[in-house]
Length: 196
Image (tube, rainbow, N blue to C red):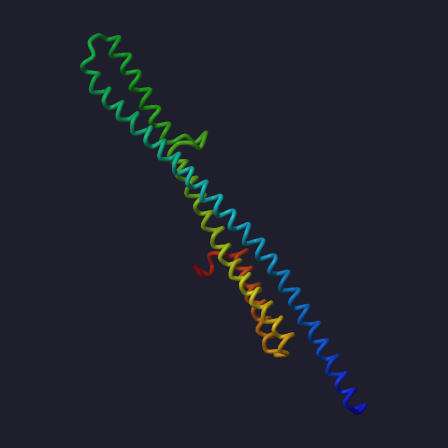
């Protein structure tokens, strides 16, 4: 091997080494972004599960309140029928007071803004929890797509080092941009793009 060939081979190796360093840096940056998207995705998934449980609990409470209200209303209506059959005035007055109490209880079961535990308030809270669940799930889907883009990009960038095909690094770079876009959509406008 001549000195000229040896020098050309060394320049080639140096160029490849510099290129590999850039690819390694790209892989490191993609791994960092992957860590962020995975962390955000896990948080969104946990939030979605938590809000789903909250909504289910609130709907169960809503149903219990509705059943209690229905029972109290039915009892009150039945007692109204018995009011005419009551013999003395003291008995009629006591039954009328009880009917009034039952009607107040039924009204309280329907709406209890001070505690937030009337059926109307429970329904509103359950719907709000469902909305938050859906928002978290939309975020989760975008973070998952971002993670997939980063993972595929890392594989392609790694393959660039082995094969020397720079086109794979460009594709990896484009996947990084796509991953960042999905992460941003998940953070700022999860309902803007409907994917799943």
